[in-house]
Length: 293
Image (cartoon, rainbow, N blue to C red; front, side, top):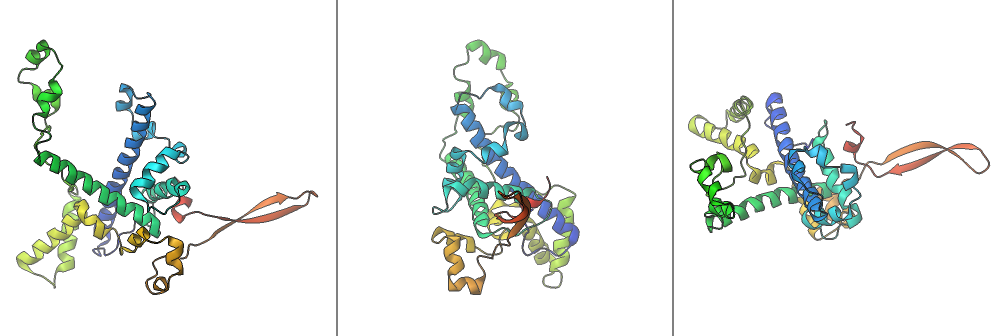
């Protein structure tokens, strides 16, 4: 899981928050992956009605996607720095996915943070774009447009039951939101911990408003650009590579690029003379890759 900075300080509340934020980010990533997979299936003529009844795990083969050049090009263009090698794009993207699914908490490396920042920013931008389209009237009379092409008998049979056809929640004027509420009773636990945390600094109505604001931050994706990151050093990758940053004098002061812990493995090897020996090899692997599924 992603380790969040600036926790409340209550063990139970912090656990709820960490799991909620990580699960929400994981859902966003799975939507991105699924969109690309379904688009690819449609392009190849493999998409049929049965796809709508299948789960994420049934539709997505992560091992296959790791080797997919088209998927690499898509995630590279949307979520990675321009200077990042295309052949490493899938490993870095799915590295974040595996981190979010891991049981332990980790602080990601700089490029993985960049991917996460880009995903959050992109999701917010997509919500804003759709809401602007709604405001501009792009979806006006969408229900009528969707029914165009059906015969008159269908229209008559439908009658007043359009809500059944489109769903009770269908509203072409309702804006999308970046807010998802923490379910009860978990929200009350977090709110109570926030009140305790700020007691002494604030009181009365000001204390209530401050605690509520903090809880809202964990619920609003817009705030994730702040609460999920210790800093925004990852944005330096728009202008420099990690290797360049590591050699810069400012890195010694800020520690933007941490030296990656080397994973050395030994394995038996038989040389040409038949003599048994052991060979050491360094693996390019992240700590969350070592967790059992």
